[in-house]
Amino acid sequence: MSASPEERRVIPITEAPSYSAPEDSLATLLAFLRRRIAGEYEVDEFGYDAELTDKVLLELIRPLYRHWFRVETLALGNIPSDSGALIVANHSGTLPVDALMMQVAVHDEAGRALRLLGADLVYKLPVLGHLSRKTGHTLACRDDADRLLRKGELVGVFPEGFKGVGKPFSERYRLQRFGRGGFVASAIRAGVPIVPTAIVGAEEIYPKIGDLRHLARVLGLPYLPITPFFPWLGPLGLVPLPSKWMIEFGEPIRTDSYDASAADDPMLVFELTDHVRESVQQLLTSLRLRRGHAFF
Image (cartoon, rainbow, N blue to C red; front, top):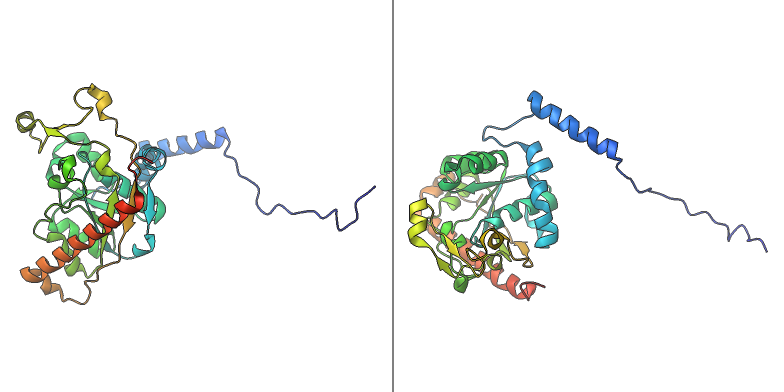
């Protein structure tokens, strides 16, 4: 028995799945290589190469972000969509993998480039220093921070520095000292908000249980960690453990009510620095409880 017209309704296909042919991918790759060889690409005054960062460098670490650490981001709406801000986060993990994961999070989830401020040591290393510049990182100094913020860029900073990233596993998720508050002064001068940010998950990737201090001093490093797997397993000990990560961007702390000259008031800078540190610690504590088990 034939179906009635009502039963023979045709459901329209509003959007067909798109498939990228191998020829298209190859053509895209060849076009990219041609531009690179011909020098037809742009870098800014800091050496940031947006195309290389997105198409190559971030692409290399996205599998870690999506599949190994399974990063979950929260409160992305606290990141300004088109104006400058200073993102201030906790630092941990023995190696600064947390900086790279936060950069991917802001780029892929919020659609903005994150300009990270790095320590002097990074730029003394030939290959690493060059790649850092290419991905938009720059030296953690007043001049660079001020220029980026006044240009409306998102700037990321880890005020704990090596004391945070290199702390022992027994002190995990306890914030170290935030320095003298230079980042707060830069935010005041630029009149941009400070976004306190908590990163949970990095503490477990390389649990630091010891330090080869004498060898680190010879190599000019701030520390040389001993973990349950390094140096005992050699290169295999450098594989990070697959902890579950969460990154939460807190409520912005406004600075535009202050005059730029307030950046020179040490008491005000100290009070704001302490306020930011306390905000990050509170976020960190609650986010750690929310995540639960470190590996599931």
